[in-house]
Image (tube, rainbow, N blue to C red; front, side):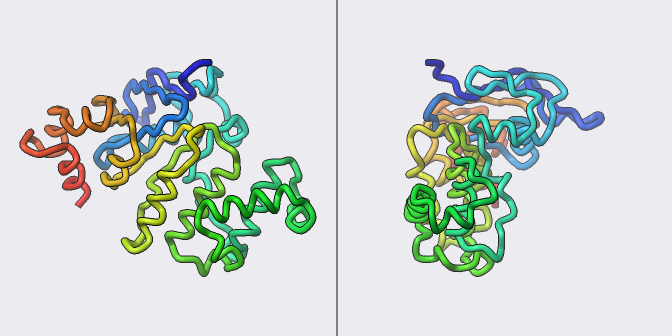
Length: 261
């Protein structure tokens, strides 16, 4: 079995005369907890948009489990097992978490528009929706409309929806962005407890989350891959220190924190 589930080779994306992604190659291993970091404007979002099909590359190749997906539409990539939380960017305000997850589970199982019947009559759908509610600490708000949920709970619901799609590769796009301090711990613990068989690529500015979660890290700067390694290697890399601070006196961990103030 190939240990590489997602890879890109020589990805280039140009917007007119601007090169947003410059010959980036990266590999995501099976079961990985891989973080993609870099200062604002580094090209992280562009790279993720290329991987998920939101943007078409100027040059380069993307493979998912050995199959070339470079020209596939986003929904086709989802069907093949690659899901991004950012794609679920508009929750149904008038629906509850239970209804939302029942809908997604029903669609995933080919029940389509019969989801409202399945919620009451399909035991498998109801059981899976309940499992997700408990796993993502949403059981106590299962019947509240989404518009009335705390922001941290909405972020948890977004990740629950992504997991309901049964991904093999999950791209978490800044999961704690905008979450108040009092709601962050619950979300961080839930992210840490994601299934081991799901390969995760995390895009995040919060270095506490990055260093506690990732077992491998990729650093982008000005659209170019600067370096890649373990969290310890990244934290002690003089190039990373220089890029973030302009000198090597402090750790990369502190440097990245400083760059986000």
